[in-house]
Amino acid sequence: MSIQKELKDIINDEVLVEIEEYIDDIFEIIAAKKETPELKEELANMQEMKKEFEELLNDLDAGEIDDEEAKEIYDEIVEMLEGMDAD
Image (cartoon, rainbow, N blue to C red; front, side, top):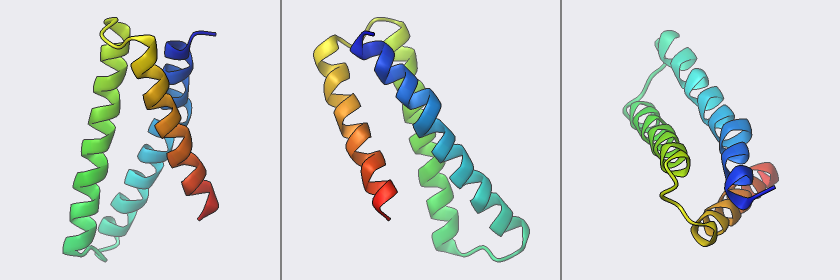
């Protein structure tokens, strides 16, 4: 499997799923009227992060990311996910 395919898979199957679940959790807190300015900022940050990963997928589909860059991004994502699992 190519590194670009692996990168697409990890973004679609893990990163975006985690982000969407976190955004859903934030919306539930907001719906319960327990929002804070920090929570609203966190929501905006997570929505921006989701947008950036979606743009990254578009760049991959357009062939704008070479294997070397894809490998670097993939490694950073794996490291990030491992850090989340340790929490």
